[in-house]
Length: 188
Image (cartoon, rainbow, N blue to C red; front, side, top):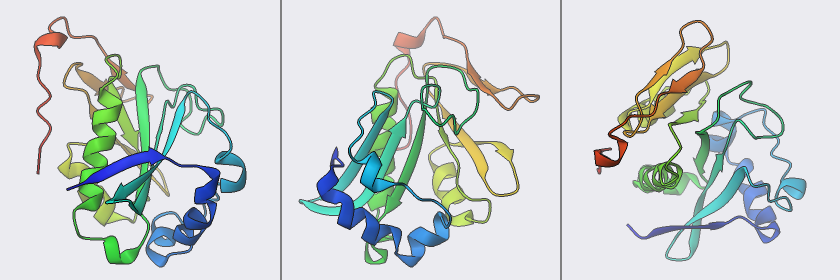
């Protein structure tokens, strides 16, 4: 599948606003205002906003952040060396074709290409069971459930990762044999 990422730019404003108004996008993120007019002009070191394209045609959006540096502190007090992903397909006609799977594979590869990254976080809506299944097929593990969101993480194969049962903070401990481990995530 020939899907490539490129940086989202202010020229993508109309496209992203259009996608934000699609029923399947609203259903998965009903109360979120991404403030595209402002955010597309910002390029903080802790964030990548990407447009996924297939053969030059925009398909979807991916955001990868370092949640310990993110300026709104959305993820709370989290340790360093984590990443968080937001991902969606823009048009309903592009759902169910494997594009999201390929986008997530590439996003995870980008996250874990940084040797110090120990885990990746995601937070689908509690009632979005289709998204839960999608993330679980990649190996994401449940962390916590609040009234709206469910938080999951996927650990790097390089680091044993656990979730502290009291604080729900994902923690990693460097593995002394990290360089000898291959990345065995599924390649469906």
